[in-house]
Length: 289
Image 1 (cartoon, rainbow, N blue to C red):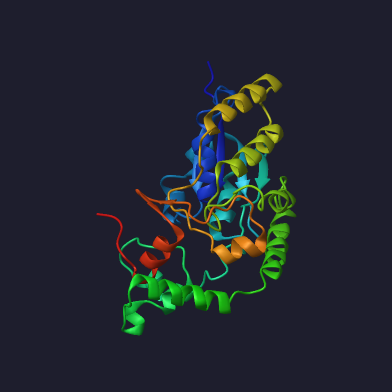
Image 2: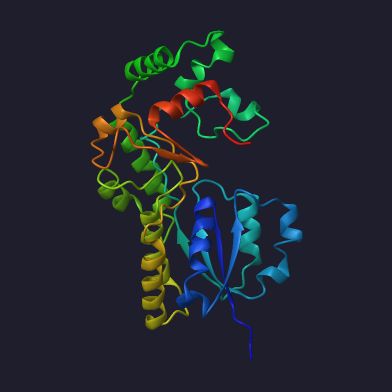
C-alpha cells in the first residue's frame, strides 16, 4: 500500500493557522498528509536539515502564500525543491493597516529582550515615562493619549485606499483574491485582531477557495471538509492571542458597526478594555510571569 502524498503549506502565521485547521479536516487528510513551512521562522540552515530534499519527496500540492517584490532566498529554495508535477495554489496574505493608523516607530519593540508588545503604537511610545521622565495618573495619561491621537488622526479613507493598492498588487499574483471580500465586509464584521492577525471568518473564506482549487480532492471529500470546517470554526476566534483594540475615533470614522467601546480584548491570559491596553502599552507593563 503506497504512502499518502503530502500537501505543503508555505506561509506566515496565517499559513500556520491554515495548517492547524487543515489537519482536522478528514476530507483533506484522507488524501494528503499536511506539512508546514512557516516563512517567518525558516532559516537557511533549515533547508539543509528540516526541509531537505527528502522532506519534499512526497509533496504533490503546495498552498503557497505569495509576496510582492523580489523573491526571497527562502522562496527561491522552495521553488527549486518542488517536483515538476507539483500543483501550486497561490493565496495572498490578508493585511489591513488602516484600522491601526499609529502603528510605527517604537524603539522599545526592538530593544526589549522580553516579548512584550510587538504591535507598535508611535503616539503611545512618545508618552512612555522612560522617555518623558514623568508618569502621571491614569486619567491624565490616557487623556493625553486621546488628545494627541485625535489631533494627529490621519485621513483614514486615504489609508484604506493605500491598503487596497497594496493588497491588490499581491492579489494579482495569486489564484485567490481577497481584497474585494475584505473591503465588502470589514466594516460590518470583525475580520482582523491586528493588522495581520485574523478572526476565524477570513480563514473560512480562504479554506473554501483553497479546497476548491486543490487537485486530488473529490467533490465528496471537499463537501465533508467544508462540513467539518463549519463545525470546527463555530465559536472559534481565530488568531486572538493578541487582540489590538481599535481606537474609538477610528471605529467612528470608518463606520465599524461591530465595534463595542467597552469590550474587553484578549491579550494572552488577560482581558483588557481599550483604555487598559493603552495605559499598559504606554508604561510597557509586563503581563507574563
